[in-house]
Image 1 (cartoon, rainbow, N blue to C red):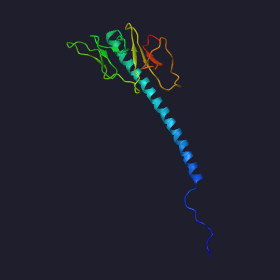
Image 2: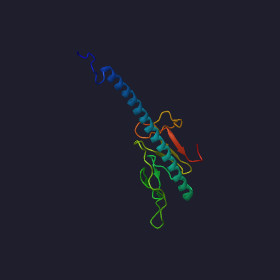
Image 3: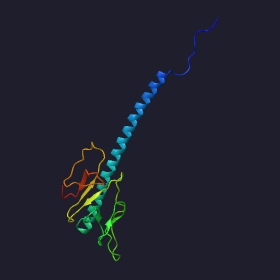
Image 4: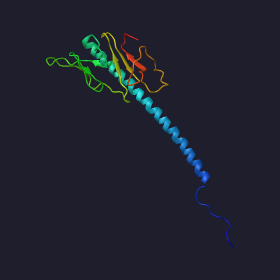
Amino acid sequence: MVDTRVMRRGFTLIELLIVISILAILSTLGVSNFQSTRIKAKDISRKSDLQTIAKSLEAYVNDHHTYPLSDANFKIICKTNGSICDWGKEFSDGLDSSTPKTIYATMLPVDPSGFTYHYYSQNGTSFILYARLENTNDPSITTFDPVVYCGGTNLCNYKVSSSNIL
């Protein structure tokens, strides 16, 4: 007598397609959440960077009774000889060789995505630091008049200012 039961091994095509579809949906959700988290982390880094710079500027004003001025490219003129303290470089007062210089930041932070930070101080009585936040849902985002660009056509949308201005 022949056994009529056939032993099935493996999965049917429909079962495989269902599993593949579920995995695709889960991976799509995971990647989008990961991208969102990365953007938020970069924005947190930017906010922290601007706070660090602001604290360095407050230390500078305690020593010199004025904030350093900004140049036409929104960088800090930090040395008594008019030299620029560029992003990613040391921020010091750079006094002449007869007096020691004070280092306010061993390295001014650089934007994590290649945008640029902007420093503005026209008369040394106050300052504004600008950055570009990428998370469009961040409640800190605002627009500025006049418009400030943080790299190419990307508008700056976040600022930190000295305590004596809004």
